[in-house]
Length: 194
Ligand code: HEM
Ligand code: HEM
Image (cartoon, rainbow, N blue to C red; front, side, top):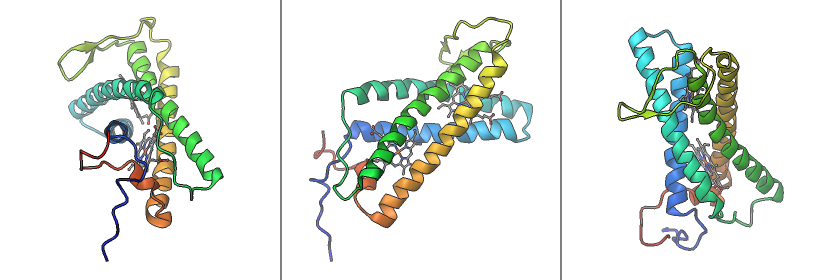
């Protein structure tokens, strides 16, 4: 039997919210993957350097998009959750989303600070197009080690939050089937949503 299409009436994230969510999600997951490989795999020096440069440049692209997303989000409320979602789950979702916003800012900001505090002070080239400015840290590299720790833990805390977030999304989508999962899916009928 063909199910009725309720998508036109169900509250959804706007196209912009959905686009930014998936673009940034893909960038962050790539960044975590690159960070893991860069730091824990045995690589040829040239390969390691090019992964390192890619990680730094993609991290800055992510930072710009995330800053735009935050700014945009301040003026746009997310859609209401379906009535079947329990109050406890609503609170948990709101706190997790808040922490995801904090985490997705702290990771690239700490990466930028780490790159700027490095005693090598390598230019932060954005794919050879132009150099992104470095933050004004002392040239002796004394902040490099503590900032490496901050970036390391920020990355792994964000990864843990994302794992919980994906598990919750799958629980909504596959077990509860309550419409929460579809709220953020991209919609390909461009005429229906703002
Ligand atoms: C395969 C991966 C992912 C899936 C399936 C997924 C799924 C979802 C779903 C279903 C929602 C809507 C929840 C609701 O309406 O309460 C959502 C919202 C959200 N997701 Fe994801 N997500 C994924 C990856 C990520 C990643 C990597 C991040 C990175 C930080 C992220 C950050 C967020 C945030 C901040 C919101 C709340 C948006 C807002 O209210 O402005 N998601 N996600
Ligand atoms: C969304 C943004 C970012 C995420 C999620 C992220 C995540 C990570 C992760 C998980 C690691 C491996 C940490 C470890 O195992 O010790 C790492 C390493 C690193 N990241 Fe990022 N990063 C981001 C942005 C940046 C940016 C913007 C820069 C610099 C401009 C940067 C520079 C570095 C450097 C230099 C390392 C190697 C640290 C070391 O020497 O051990 N990252 N990053």
